[in-house]
Image (cartoon, rainbow, N blue to C red):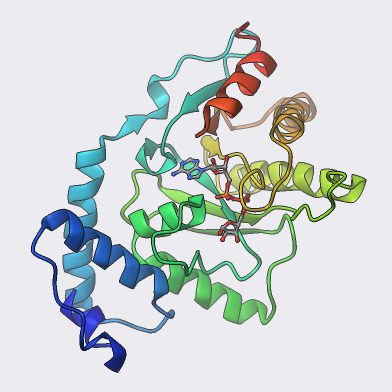
Length: 256
Ligand code: AR6
């Protein structure tokens, strides 16, 4: 913590809170706002110790233990915090900068994933984006290690931003479809056998939930129909809100 607090003169007035929960929130906030600059190995050692403690506290959930949905044993549904999932890769709903959310303690999934994985993810994504020399296009996938997550890899993808009050355009529907398809292709290329998708674009980016879920499930089903030799054996639809749980239950054939 002291390493991060010493990085900016304006942090000089911040006093370390006494409670461990408050200290964890301060650490997360400092991680969230931190620019992707190098950091000393001792900080990383202590950060990793703290994040693995938090990971065990939240409890790891193994995707391998999930049963499949009635219509397709490869497709499963799980409601909860994606940072708890032990799976070959999780999909992050990122933005075109691909550096994670900079708003301290924000409730988006990008913030949750970067905060639980550690500052190494921002550093790795930054190095990749420097090579790109531009922001990521919508539906383009950037793959990084999972670091302190139970997931091995994180596939970062930026979904379409719905700005029109009438709902998404056809182009935005295709872009959302491409997010799911491109992540499956990336997982296949990296020989990752299990993948957990979040509900891309349905939060801050305002894509309507039911339509987004239909695109997600249809795209995954179409992928399996077109790739009979696919090495992907499990796709988890990870929902967070009850609204999405009900929508996906219906789409995956669980009944009401
Ligand atoms: N685990 C699983 N799902 C979650 C979690 C979590 N811990 N937290 C939220 N969700 P959003 P977007 C769900 O807004 O709409 C960020 O600031 C949430 O309920 O995170 O694609 C990025 O940096 C919703 O269903 O992503 C971008 O700027 C889903 O994750 C922007 O938001 C996506 O909601 C991306 O917006």
